[in-house]
Length: 328
Image 1 (spheres, rainbow, N blue to C red):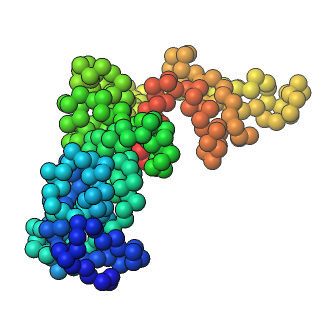
Image 2: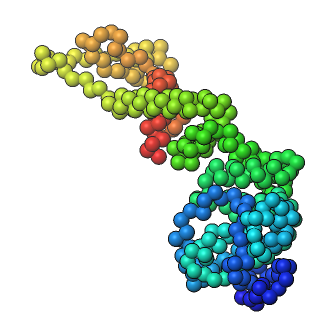
């Protein structure tokens, strides 16, 4: 733990902590103010930080009030008489005030106040990826950072972000208020929001509803297809003639005569049993297969796929694919 400094006995010149990052100075709460440019619009529930009353596990990153006001002199009223501005740790500061802590452990790094882009970028990066930092807040914060650079590409290079990530976040700000609310509530996926952002704001709600209806209809059709594929009709004897015998006739499916001298292979021809009373159109046609025995090789996925493709419609194939995928 670094040496504690009583800032009340020092001029308006803040004290820079030169100790290693794991060391921190404790300063009275009255000398610290939260970042007026904090990208978080709401600090949320602070109960998870209740233990700060007795122990602060992580210090707050601060810059001097003088350095901050050099960047945003218009924030003088919001900084007031504080000597430090918290860049990272505004929730910790709020929790300390709420739960009765008298001092705040800080790490002072004045280099963070070297530019507006640097300070805003540092504030944003602490919150990126946190569950309680909603995606619209993040988009607004990214937009504010980019505004401090000559271009989005320059901002990406300075902050170590990718241009694509910046573009995706900024696109969300093109959503209408209704769509932004749906995104914040979790009713709208980010990937769908980015697509809707390319639609004129006045048409976004109607487009979203139309897409939802189309998706619901597709699910309905797919569900019906799954049911149809799952139910395999079973043939039953004619109930009016329960005792009628079924007559089968042996049909030569190789085209040659058994043991005939004209047979090239001299092998016995294959015969298929056919119901003689069934319509002629039901007589099965000879089919090629991937195995020498004439049966499907169920260990060969390619052979199975070829067989299915030759006997099923596209809709049936898609339904079967969905069934197989669901069972993986």
